[in-house]
Image (tube, rainbow, N blue to C red; front, side, top):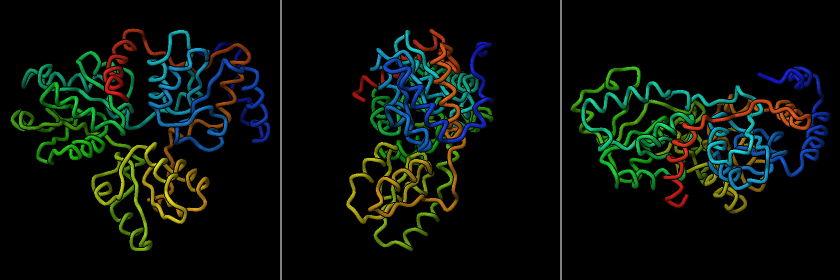
Length: 366
């Protein structure tokens, strides 16, 4: 609940863009060294321009944990990112999400109750604690990270998933990967597993829709979840671009479907996409399969290259897009007034266990 004297967001709706810009600059200056604003790669440019650091979710969370002298961390991203920042940050820091409606539909596809039900199902078939390593994508809620921490599991990012999978197999025979089926499939096959080793687990069906024997035979259990933005990209889009541009390079995020990643020249995280395109020679042609704001930013920054959004459908991540200049200004002007709005605070026990899952990943050198 907001402090009764906190500034109300409604009063900001009539502000002109110029006013919002000037007041945001003034608020940042007033807060000075107490404030750091983090901007995820997928944020719109008019938010990114006020961020002190930009990057993917884990990079930004790690940056925030290293800035122990900053009292306020304003995370321009989605809820699970702000939670991760709170997990990794000292207890005296305050993490704020400018708009609490900024969530992640993929992260919401795996709820703790459903994951616990899956685990119980596995335990009824074989000793899951001995055989199955739970691996959760960082694009997930704090309580799912805590579940992994409790059961000896680990988190992963799109850039280190292969190394995390190899670590998991050093410790247990099988992997339960959630919430993104497509990143899990790409990762498993990239380390040599075959489709026959994989099983897609539908949490709405008993035993995920499989027999106990099928589950015993599987090596990786993939949660039936997906990113709606990355599933927009289709194999026919890749073929259409290649037919029009003979020198085209296609680079996509591993959350894309298998038919797209198989046809891409390069597959990797947002950081890899940024670095690869930025370091490429002038005049090169790229079709990029990831969120539109990032693609448009690369297009603007690298005007000496031909850069295309891989899908003919213009679509932004709707929940990422909820962080706008109005909400950012509202959040930091409240801080100037001494009011904290939209604080993200992970419960202590959950924070501890989620921290263990993150620590296991980072102990691998990431």
